[in-house]
Image 1 (tube, helix red, strand yellow):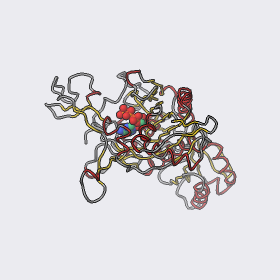
Image 2 (cartoon, protein in one colour):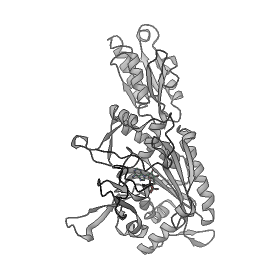
Image 3 (cartoon, rainbow, N blue to C red):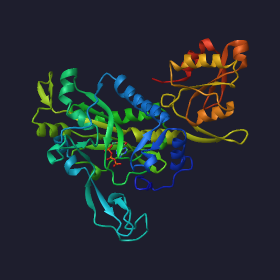
Image 4 (cartoon, rainbow, N blue to C red):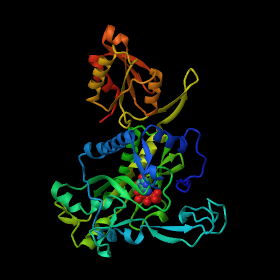
Length: 455
Ligand code: ATP
C-alpha cells in the first residue's frame, strides 16, 4: 500500500526538529494498538483506518472533551445526531452536487493521480517527468450508493460529505422543540465521507472520517463579532486540553479564497509532521444554507423574533473540526523522546489526562502472590472511576515505560510495604516521574486531584 506524501502542507519549510515524523507516529500507533490500516490482512484499503483498543478510547475522549466544552458547559447550545443518508435534494440545495469537486490530473508516464491544485509545477512528484499531466478533469468527491433493490437514478443517495447539512435541515425541528432564542447553536459529531483523489498522510486526509461541527445561529448584525468570539473560544479549547500554542496559528482566508456566500473564514492551522496545515475551519456562512434549503424544500426556514415582531433568516457561524485530524494533532503534539539518567530512551505521550486513553495503571511490584490480592483490590477501586489498566508483566521500569508511551498520566504501585506495613501505595506521575506515597483509603481522592479536567 503506497502512501503519497506532500501536497497537504501549507508551508514548505522543513519540519522543525521537535516535531515527530509521521513514520514514528504511525509505527507507535500500530505497535500499541491506537490505529491500524483498514482491512490490513487484505493489503489495506487506501484512505481508511481502524481505531484499536487504545485509539478508540482516545477518540472517545477527544469527542467527549469537545462535546463537554461546546454543548454541556454552555447554555446556548444543543446537540443532534442526524442520519448519514439524506434526501438527495439536500446536496442540490447545498451546492455539493454542482461544486463539491476537485480538479484531477494523471501523469501519462507513470499513471499517478494528483489533485491539480496541490501540484506546484509540471514535474510529476512520482516519476520526475516534466509536462506529462493530462488536462484537469473535475471530479465530484461525494460517495454514491443506492437505496432499495433497483439500482437506477431514482434510488441514488450520497454518503454525507459533511455533517453540517443534517443541522440545517433540522433547523425548524430544533427551534420548535427547544423554543430557543437567538443566538443559539447546534452541535453534531458524526461520520463523513469524501472520495478524496489522493487520501494521504495517515489519518490527516481519509475517505471516511468523523467531524465535530457547530452551526451557531445569530442576528445578521452580530455575525462578525460572533465569528471572532468562536475563534477565540476554539483557540481556548485547544489550550485547555494541552495543545502547544506555538504549534497553532490562525490563517484568515484571503478574499479570493472565500466562498461567494462567506464573509470570513479562518483556518486553525496546526504544525503537523507534514508541516502547517488546516486542523479546523471557522466560517461565517451568512444566511446561505438556510436560504438555499428553504428554496429547495419549499419550507420557511426562518426565525420569528417576538420582540422585533419580524421574521429573520439567521446568519450562521460554523466551526468545523475533523476528529481524526484532531487525534493526529494530539498524538503529534504530545509525542516526546527523552533520555533518562542511565542514557536510556524514554518515549512519552504527554497527553492531557482528559485525552489520555488510560488514566491510571495499577502495577504490583512483582507477581508475588502476597501482592496480588491487594493490587487487584486497588485495581477494582480505581477502575470504577476511570479507565484503568492492570499490568504485572516484566520489570516495573519497563511497565512504567510502556505506560509513558501510551500517555497514561498516573501509575499506582503496590509493593511489600503496602501489604506488610502501611496499606499505602505509590503514585508515580508520568511527566515529572515524581513519586508520592498515599494511603489506599485516600487513593481515589489523590488520583482525582491529579486528573485535572477529566470529565
Ligand atoms: P481540504 O481543503 O483540506 O480538503 P476542506 O477545507 O474541504 O479541507 P472542510 O470542508 O472545511 O475541509 O472540513 C472541515 C474539517 O473536516 C477540516 O478542517 C478537517 O479537520 C476535516 N476534514 C475534511 N476533509 C477531511 C478528510 N478527507 N480526512 C480527514 N479530515 C477531514
